[in-house]
Image (cartoon, one colour):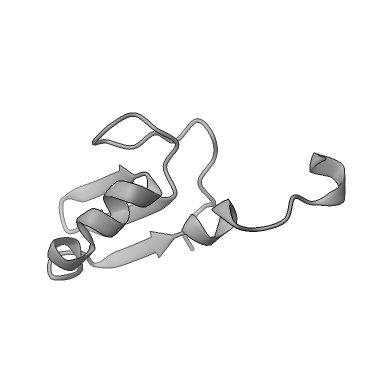
Length: 66
């Protein structure tokens, strides 16, 4: 099970909050939604798993987070 990404997880390309975790045979990469989409095709051919939480950007905040 892949743990949920938090605000402390940062994009390896630009430093923004990460919403995509890419597991590779040699480790992992974290990406913001923009860079996750930009590199999706290339990453899908080498990744062992892609965990994408970018849908959280459009989700309504929970009652306790307002």
